[in-house]
Image (cartoon, rainbow, N blue to C red; front, side, top):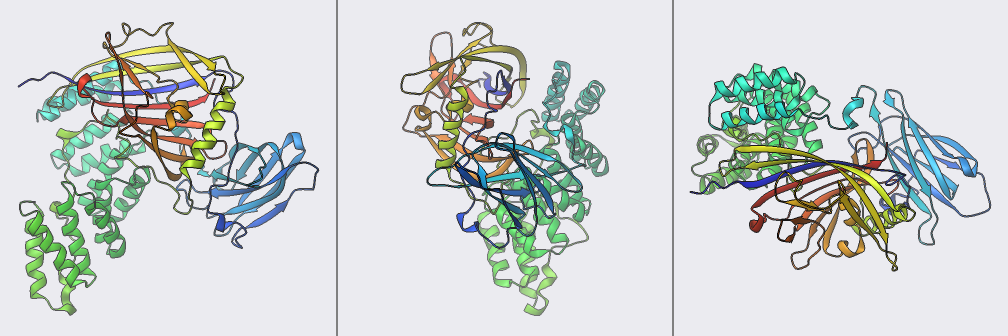
Length: 584
């Protein structure tokens, strides 16, 4: 059997443009539900003194970091220096909003403060149009206790640390646990605070059912400023098994804020709520977990049946138990379903809660599958397996966001001829057994030239380290179009080949952002992303997600994955993550 390596590549780039690229404020159009306008729940209204000239109404919505309206009174200051405006008011009440009426057109700054929170600031350009005199701004408040380093650039990981982690993962996959422990101990000496090392140590201890030790390692990973969903899931898994249901709920709710589409997160949280006898919440998360139709579906449906039985819904419980026995007769949870169904048949409706989820011990058959042999902490989740949380009460239009972001990027580039950017390439090759065989790094500097076409369109021509060849790449494959990806997604020529979906109002590094999912249409070529070999250039169909500042329509962040594996390149995965920001 061939073991020829399949290429899986993860690229993380921070693109810093000189001048004011991607920091120029653009048109803001109302995205909140229009029916909310004039709602008596709005906390207050501030009228700006009448002036001659165009003006607009500005609605500021103050939000918690979770996306929900702030549950505290917040002082909102609106300053438009060129227009001589400096007004303030309090946002409070159910909607945590404030209205500023008759704000002159032009640049303005907004500052929001509240006891116990860091002062939040944002910039907007007030515009007036015939169709919309109302503009909506969303400001996120973050507790003073929240880590200030969470929005900092990711630290550079030493190559020696990566090698030790790779060796540890290889040993874990082969069940050579002592070798894995030696490599992880060495990795921990190189970087004592690295959360990925702590996560791997926790997974190794979890494999040996050393729950208290695993909990310590997972807690260490969670406490890091770079805590990730997998560490929270690991900690929540251990807390559920150790009957720490209340703590598990807090941990797993945080994990689902990072990834609302986490099947393991929903199943674990269903277990935790069930043990707290909060059955409606447990039922909701069990149903969500069961809907994924994966290896954990039998466990989710069995747990759902027990929750229904605990609530007295005998028919619903019977239906789910019988479905598990019919569809998943060999699953570990099938024996639980069989015993519970027999117990249900022996009880009367008045005593049907006897089959409720046992609270004294945890039945591992109803927990998601987990194994240290399958961990790959270097591989971020794809855009379709990790869905960021969004505010439930705010809607958005993909068409509007694409239109305004396209105008914003075009305006930013109007007076620029070139800008600088940097890129770090990390190339990993993984064989058919999932083992990392080698890792190679390369840093590049870009000079990006901006070409302005007669029809008003803008094109970016990138020169990587003075050229475009493939010789300096970690392999014979080279990427083209990386720097301009976040701009090109909204370029009319590329955008027409993509299907967009606005997922809602979320945030990126503390700033309110519209989140859009995009995927290239199957019957259209886009040339949005290209890979070059020494003999040919290959188009790479993409899917991805982009974060756009809700106040200015600046592109903040973009992530992309292959729409499907590229067999002709033996490219199985190509995950790209790019941050955009002003030059430093």
